[in-house]
Image 1 (tube, protein in one colour):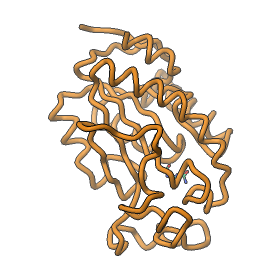
Image 2 (cartoon, protein in one colour; image 1 turned 90 degrees about the vertical axis):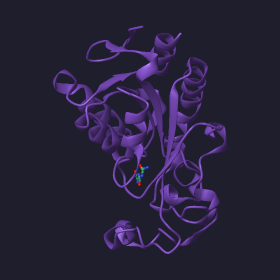
Image 3 (cartoon, rainbow, N blue to C red; image 1 turned 90 degrees about the horizontal axis):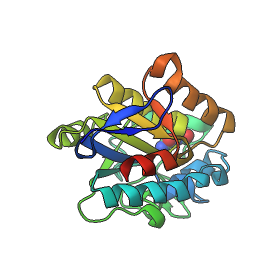
Length: 220
Ligand code: TIU
């Protein structure tokens, strides 16, 4: 059955059977004190605003039976999948170093994992990604194709880095993406504002933007 999400720049038609929720990198390293985000000099309270809206959207998506996918940015313990250039970003080396929640952005460490509030349940695939985009060097596209997915609801952090990189990758692959603005977070309020404006400018150049309440209403 065709439904509609209220969204900008215009309503987005979707079908529950071909819609997935993708929650990007809601990892302790990015949203809790002591992780990579804070090590880069950021105030994590700015991205924590996305947690509660993400909880409500995740619940609505689970209740509606959507495919739900979680992603985590991180690397192998030996860093063999981390480009050398990425290791030196920020002026200091952080990835792989010991942080308060284990080695920063390393798979298997506590800080790399998803925050307990949004923890995946059985049947929800987790995509471990080495880059900012969730399609690069992962099986995300294959999983979406196998489920006949056409529409993506994209939430998570950070808006201008991993969220919009993933949305751009998805858009180029033919997926229609809607971003509930309160479910994404940035350490920079002005980047949050303009990243969201960029998505929906020019008639929705690479996606749609709405609010968690529009997602919940559309899925009812
Ligand atoms: N630093 C920053 O804004 N983001 C990242 O490094 N990764 C994600 O956005 N997940």
